Image (cartoon, rainbow, N blue to C red):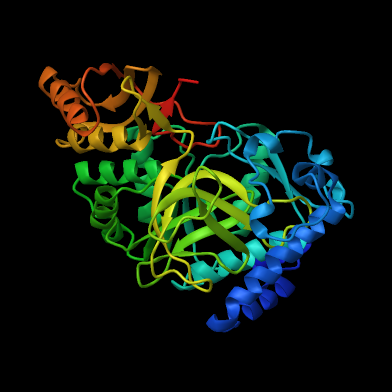
Length: 437
């Protein structure tokens, strides 16, 4: 079969063949030599940017380093300045890949990758999806993502979908009437896998459950479901497996970097050690032992266009105790660092704790389709939800009691029933958000 996807990368100046060969070389490095490879590569990229990137040199405040931990941790806010001020000497905006983050972290910015680095990102994607026999050139994807609404942006994205063998279902309106149309497409197209935002795909699964339909009965070609960009809870994973009738693969990535972790065929969340160096740090930027939680900080080992050196992606996670340099395993992704609830007692709690506790009660009877939680004051939380029927007083009291047991008493809740929830411009659903600065 002709490889339209690979050709589209080549035509856009991304050397995919060279990148694929390089990726295979990195993969073939023996486990005993992999620590040496990572240390040499991270040193090389940091040294390159200290020499060739004025923005990074000023951030570090020196032109050389002796120990890795001397280098500062970069944050998203430091990257919110014009891209041309962050580019390395050898690059201009015309000869790099330019994109912008979704802004789901609350701190959007434009970023650049040199073309070989971006080709390596695709080599990694091709490799990971290939674990499951998925080929971007031939495996038809049912894509649950956002899409630009302006005419030119929309047409460009649709053309990319065509070249990538994807059929896109925009996620801004997922009412039952729209999901009926989605289901019809599955009855007429030979999709191999679903891929998209967790919340949107979960909503589709709930719709199928209501109709007592298992998706691969109506679409026998379907083999996998890949979810990304939002938290996947265990009960949602079970729902997806039940209603789609296929295995669920969990992906974790960042557009400005690469795939960060991808669930392998044995069920482990395998971290990308080939093109990224992932650290878990405490609040003082010191590494924590494997098995302990901390901030996820990542170095892009190949991006020469602009530095992502010890870059805090804004998430909290845990590396498994059995992790090695060659095969790090992400044991748990806990949530975003900026989604922390500060409580009246002074206690801090990950916002997803509220979401998880509420979720265990609010979805018991299948009435509530989806919901979000916002902290509006130190003791006040708003719960916006979409449902067939309004929540009862008994359900509300049950939620308040459960949160008091998990966290603390004396918190106030306002429940607002909505026709649909507000999503970000990219189509993501922010499950918890603190309005407290």
